Length: 470
Ligand SMILES: [Ca+2]
Image 1: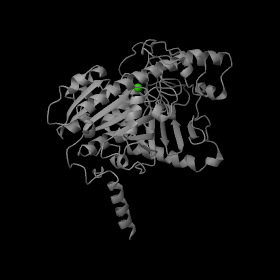
Image 2: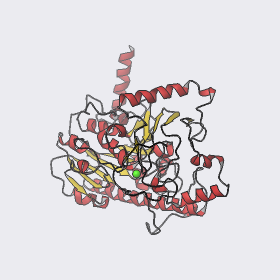
Image 3: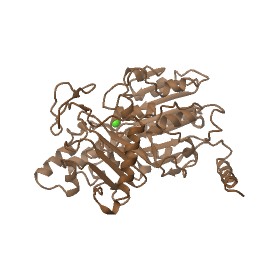
Image 4: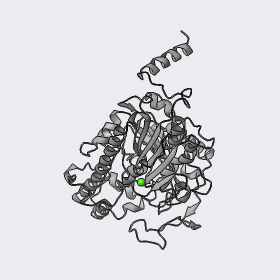
């Protein structure tokens, strides 16, 4: 048997393993009835914070069941750890820096096409319920837009017969602020798993418990959606994607290019086209979502999409579609310019503005931030926690995520990694050039103080250009 024959023979065996269902191959696309597509987007949910991802205390039985019936990705990455530009990527298949909407709160420019518009060509009816965050140009491309994610059934009840639906559910959970009465059976501070970059004190633990409660509230709503799909006998004809727009909303997580900011949970359930209960450890980016959903619908991605069709990886979770994922950080109330590349093991970050300190602005009023500041003033922070306050930052950072999963040890100057650094640096430069990135010198004004969160004038909407120096 030749190598080619053998490959084809193994491919047939693999296809047969799907109990008679057609695998998601290019040949299969466009044949049969396109699936309904349900895109469930959590807001600020970290990659470890579900039971099925190994969290010991957060209660997520419904999402865990979803994972047990689909493929769970352990190396899924957003393109930026910031709400609106991350969602821009999911809906356009393009990196934020190439959309004109790379900064927080910047609406999509006129003429930008997003998923529901592409899917309309395949007769899809579309709705967004809850958070969308793409501005009026994005909202106008859905057939129905409802402000509250809790109204998903109200929207679905109005879907026209005879057409597949595409529904995006933009949960506001588990975004801040947190309250005491989110659940009748709340998590306790003793349930908190405190990552080593935060101070382990009662205030931080109470905040984490509040975050856990919102994760569970979202999970219970997903359970209601799942029951509805089952009652309507739509489970088998619906492709469900569950994903988060960025990491957990705590210092050194949301807003950063570390895995705590950019790695997210991702689960795909597509009966007949994705094997149940499998784990995919291959790299996938949310820039791949739009091309993949279009492929599932039998539509072609447009030439200007940066992402790749991952439906083959949904079918065979042992396969791979990319050697690298790429991440960026732009204006998020504070100006910044970071670009990063990660392979299966190493992470490279280029800091375009190393002289300024940066974080995610919405964390500056948190208890966990206050705890860090107070412990710093008492000289009680660990060396790892002090890294959060390091200014100037290194111009380049390199981490071995296998041996140093929290990315505390910068290997950029370590001769043992002399071959890794230039490889990732070159890949970062190639990506920036090929995707029309703009130079780090393009600046915008901060509208909040980086430490105290004091407002500088207008604090909503697009940032204003800045021509000053650091
Ligand atoms: Ca978010």
